Amino acid sequence: MKVWIASFFILLALVQFYQWLRILTIPLPFLLLGGAILAIVSNTVPLQPQKSQDAISDQPEPPSNTLP
Image (cartoon, rainbow, N blue to C red; front, side):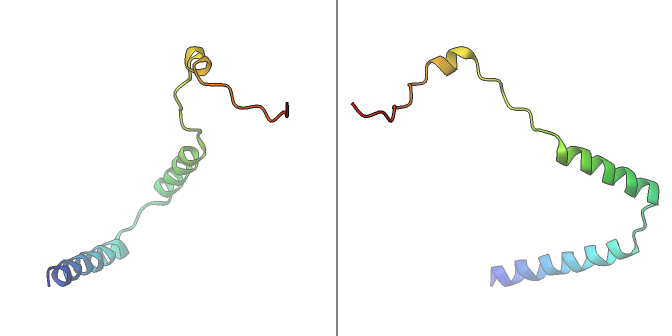
């Protein structure tokens, strides 16, 4: 029963949000600026921590595939 009540309120909130979103108007310059920002952010390379040389040298060597 709790799932039905929670689902009902979530559905009601989504319908209310959709109705509010339909009357919302955003000026074109803000849409263009937002699109440009999203394009820049989505194409940036995420910063990854640099591995130190000590951490690399501590790793074991991979096994070789040569036959004896």
